Image (cartoon, rainbow, N blue to C red):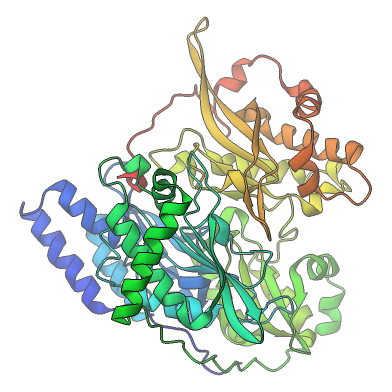
Length: 574
């Protein structure tokens, strides 16, 4: 078993004390509902579409957790939620259907493990995300984790961090492929080395939602020592110039659109000069931790190597580290869900087979590093025992989804049910062998707001509704987006091609994969194909599923009764 792994602590019991004071004041009538809502949001409590229950978002900077943190989240899930947590595209864990009376106890249990919920929601500097593999990948320019940790500490409890016009998102990527999607963030950093000096390419003012915006390049290269000053200057600009009257136009990208790029840069440079003069924004970069991997576990290895599925799992889930003799192992979570039993088991497994740490990923999975090659068969057996040896990570079967109408008041459709239905459909034998299965990214959102990041998917869907005036019925549909993504050139967004009935969307995916099979050029990837394919060919390929709705199509996927749009004011927009 590995020795105690370094896991940064971000919590403070004072934060929980302050929450209790505000909650009691609200219960005594000293705060209005709106005043308390504004406070609880920046402390991680988010209202659901169901009344009298909350979602608690646990803030996990750059996705790094270990056994203590997983045990704490599992305890909260069991005692105050539904027995499982949901890993998000921002490397957080969300726990749904909590009662307000349990919030203090849940927060205190998180605090015991160093986990905070502060500024996980609301008009705040949100969780700093980062590449899950930067510490050990041979493709990493350098490890971004110390910089992501330093930026987190700088902005957590920052005087401006919880009083912004809207949310503010930061990401760090370890190479030009932009694995953390820096190009769609308010502030994004791409690890770069120039003349032997570590630094970053810096993006600003990106975002998705209903009107996606690719970030502009603020600096082609900036020495790593200066990135905190950039962050301070951009945050000050957003705090001063963000729209506080119309929250639908309040993100930093709208400041860019209003000012235009030349004026945006001029305002940034002026504020940067102020920050430099004040010597603000100095980051304390932590030393790289010493990792102590567990010794190899070789018991029963021969039997494990012969276990059904082992070779397929190894091929799809295991990547070699740049450290000789070690691998990193991806654990595919179905729709980002992990139950309390699995969380506790994963913590123990990480200590037994790795260095005690795991990383939650931006595609709603888990990565366990520092596994000795000789331990892989035994690790497979351990993961299989708790149903965590699922195949096909990072394939078309590994669909990303927002929570959708299951809990979000803004959602029109059940995006999680569609994501599950797509995965199930692609598990059927008639699609085995399709080349596009391995390289196609599919993302689903329950409304146009793109919490499921459908804009940057090879195949993306966002939920909606269509009214048949003659029949007097409304039925669920999905808008198909094709050819979005993020790469070394920045972000580009999928083209809206056609609307598909919700229950037919899984079959639409199969037809799209078959279209690639028949039409792609030699050497062409699914990403390149779906980015350039003629929309007329897409519509023609989807013709078999494009007929008028039947009575079954009136209900959403997983539902047996008629469809009814029941959207409200989601607190992500409040």
